[in-house]
Length: 114
Length: 110
Image (cartoon, rainbow over all chains, first blue to last red; front, side, top):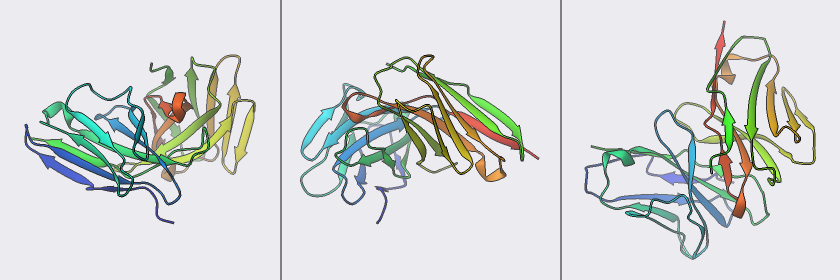
């Protein structure tokens, strides 16, 4: 049973470009979460999605950031017009439908904005 | 809000026990979690405890929960060099997300 798969592992973008980060949840998991880890900091919750629905986006910046989890295919975290402050590790996690079930994390995408 | 707190660093001698502490303010969480992050990797679930339990033991790991004081600890017995990592405490939040502390960096002295 493959774990949570994120790609790419590393992504370099110039200021003003778009970044698209992909996450495939574990088999049998229908809930996806995105977290951001700034250098030398902890993990900050960004957004929680189920298939075709955003459940909680209380941690998403109001501008430039969006997330989706379509009926088919991976979840996508999209950052438009990236700035240097967006440089961070972005982690995806997934869980089952059971309330309070543990989150299983991917190895993250490290975004560097030059 | 960010209501989970941990000390940033802990240094222990190889073979000793490590105790990593965590406090939280929201008592409505059903589960509390410990995750481990090694360099360049994601978070690995170590263990979790239901909020009506006081203690959970799993091999070298012991979790203690003091619900009255909102204090959670992780004890690692016989600490080894492979235990060097950042340890994150987390509490279950609304809509099933986990709120994490800033992490405790554990380093092992020979």
